[in-house]
Length: 324
Image 1 (cartoon, helix red, strand yellow):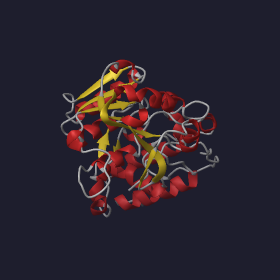
Image 2 (image 1 turned 90 degrees about the horizontal axis):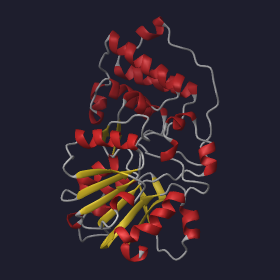
Image 3 (image 1 turned 180 degrees about the horizontal axis):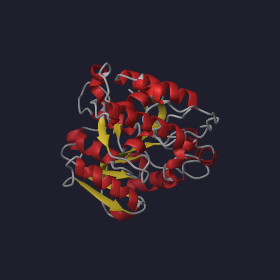
Image 4 (image 1 turned 90 degrees about the vertical axis):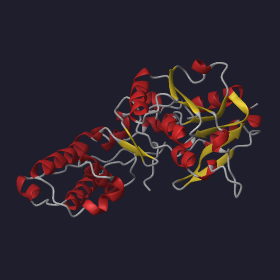
């Protein structure tokens, strides 16, 4: 699994370093898919790129870029690794590798594609690249509906879901897939982001179950009640915004900036969510490294912190009873 992490407050800027371009002689020596992946890894390491958009290291980034450009199924990449590439494919791939280095633009933007919880989504610079830990939680045992362990809710009992700060619509789509009987409302303050979300909702055939709404947090759903509210809001603090690496600066600041302490939007959600939850509902929220600040601000709230394979204490659950 690759880590889908948001930029962190202590993210540093990569040191500039001159890197050489590929010569025609070098290029013809790149014969197979694996050759191109190995070459990309070498180039990415030399350029000291930052990986924070669906991959966490140069190997995963190279495999993603090469595999997606060649339209290879990600779960069968190793099958095609020894395959030879055509001259046109090699030229295209080298161009993408050089563009990733020259521009520092995330590979997901160069390709217009990323995966969240194994599901493909279209992305461009109108939205942040989806990499929320919520995708793993939504798809995992926390909503298993079984009696042999802890569960947040029985998926069959979730009839209405609200996704705040939906961005690309990835979490709304994943929620609709997980809770097959639920209607999903997805809200974002950015009309540009909702245009991307509309494309993803349509591509996954969920127009009849996901309603996209333009507005500030709960404003478009006043008076509505939900069994589940999910949100991956802006949570990068002031210091983190100032230290964003070049890759993260391609993303819309509106989707990253959480205010001076990183919890400005999260605090608004916590303070308003109770009015929009059903009696047995709950709020599932990602906060990055905001846990200490949140717990200090709300000492009487019984946050339930949920870990994922790649994170600890970055997602909380609050039931309707706590929020009211």
